[in-house]
Image (cartoon, rainbow over all chains, first blue to last red; front, side, top):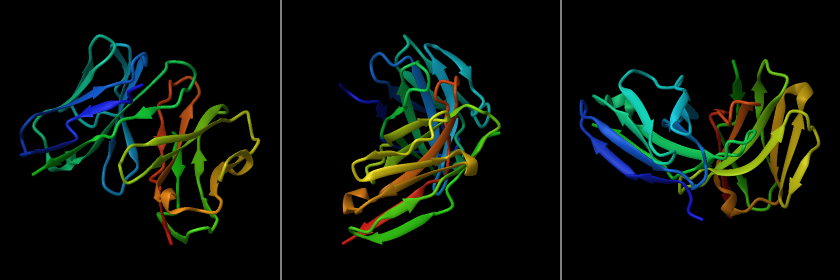
Length: 114
Length: 115
């Protein structure tokens, strides 16, 4: 079946603008995760969804970052008033909500803030 | 707090050489999961293996093998007879059991295999 789909694949925005990143998980995967990968860094956890609720938002770096998930499926990560330090690859992953099922990652959205 | 350390930033080998990627982790939990992921140039992270802390048996899958040693908090990954297609960034990761796969990643090791 189809994998995790993220859009856009690339986004260039001006500092101060808002951006929305979309993730479409694998059908049937109830858990959804957002991670951020900055140049030369590992992957940094941002937020986790179980269905439509987000029991763990501990990784969101500031209140400019928010995310929602509707219908237990598509998720949107929104970054308001973007800053240059927000430039990174934003990765979405989904998994079955059983034990510690492996995460299946999308190709990511490369965000560049100029 | 959990931490995963991949001390090797970049490794270069010639095709057919064996190569070992090191991973050392820290956790206060007695039960946890360890993972390895591969990130080829295309960017998509590919799951390779999951190992729970109860099972210290080594695992082999084709040219890949993993050595889990709880006593040294290490989960090393060996590629035998490396190939150019193995060129990628490899990430080791750790999760608590019961946290629905929230992963703590290492910073990755970039493996370059040349002819």
